Image 1 (cartoon, rainbow, N blue to C red):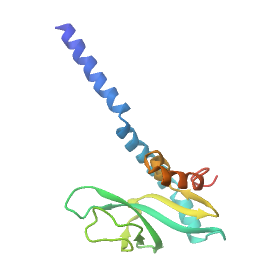
Image 2: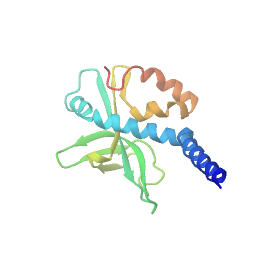
Image 3: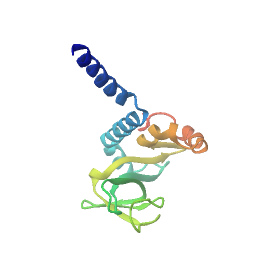
Image 4: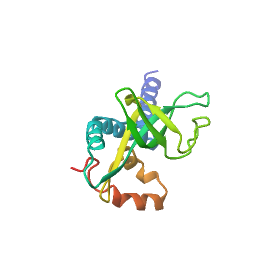
Amino acid sequence: MIRALFLSCLLALAACSGEASDPDVQFQKDLSAAADRARAKLSFFWEHFDAPEADEYDFSLKAAIPRRDGQPGAEDAWLENIARTDAKIVGELTVNPRYLGDLREGAIVEIQPNQIIDWAFMRGETLLGHYTTRVMLPRLDSQQAEWLRPLLAGSPDGT
């Protein structure tokens, strides 16, 4: 009886420790932490968006947009040509989304600040931000990753 209980405890511990070593679980944790870091530095993005330096351009935001296909959850999508007022933030979808109904690349989307999960802009030849992209690099197509790595060199906020 005690042996069976001991084996059950060992199996339960193994199951818990296996979850922590699951690459997909760790990847999701890393993405979530990257989004938290991006949100923590969002004021840096807005400061430069509002008053860009001469070599800063291509400001974009990544937002979690509620799915429109009847399923729960959100699709993460990059928006460019950002505009904001005190009441709203709008931008154009940079690609054709998968789960956002009839929205296509170039569609104007309105988001709330709490939907922002990442941000980016160019400073000279360097991409700032892209916190989640940095986590995704090992999972990207090798050509795309090779192209992005030198652009993402250094810290996400340029420090």
